[in-house]
Length: 161
View 1 (cartoon, helix red, strand yellow):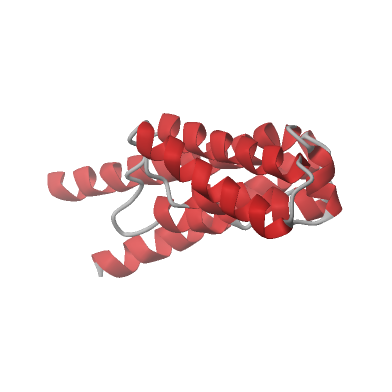
View 2: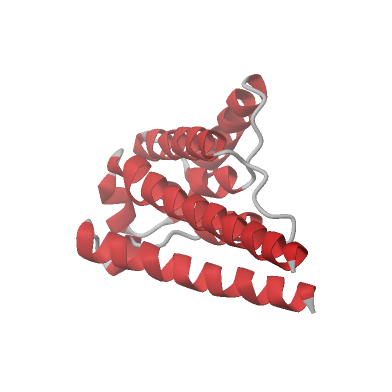
């Protein structure tokens, strides 16, 4: 029964988290619907709301996410063939992340998004690093930590009974 409750809680938190990302980006930051939620947030949420819970610190998520977003925007701005843009972006991201001993798999998707996305995201330029990347990752991390706190409180209460 505990697994079922935990799985349901992960599901509910992910749904509420993505609705929060949508509302914050749409109504507080006035972004267009096509740039509110980027695909990499799905990978970040799977990590954050998995059974093992989030193993990544906010600093690691933001550092890797923002750096790789920068790399994607930078290489998108260069007049290179598309396959060079992709390969240089991912290669440089791996070089730097390995150099700083950081691993955050959604960062690879974040890097590619400025290269393969619609013009609304490409028109954001370096603003893409802050919004939606940084704001979305902060919301995902915050909801995962809230879920962990509630889970700990639930288990503490259950043990005391």
